Length: 73
Image (cartoon, rainbow, N blue to C red):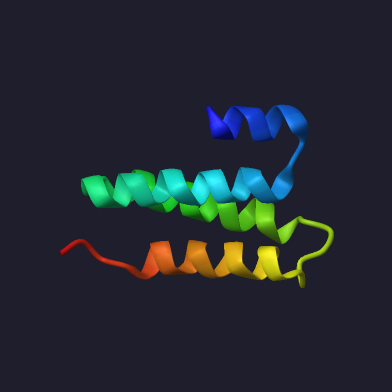
C-alpha cells in the first residue's frame, strides 16, 4: 500500500523507503533472492534521484546496502 501510494504521488524517496522495507521483510523471511531484488531496485531508483547528496537519499542508499550485506541468522 505505501509503495503504490508513493508511486501514485511520484515520491521517489518514499518509493525507495518502501522498496527497502519490502526487501527487509523478504530477507527476514529467508527469501534472499527476492530481498536482494528489492534492495537493488531501490538502489537504482535512488541513484536516479535528483538530489542524491541529501540526507534522506544517503540514508536510503545505506539502508539498501545494509539489506544486501546482511545474512540470515
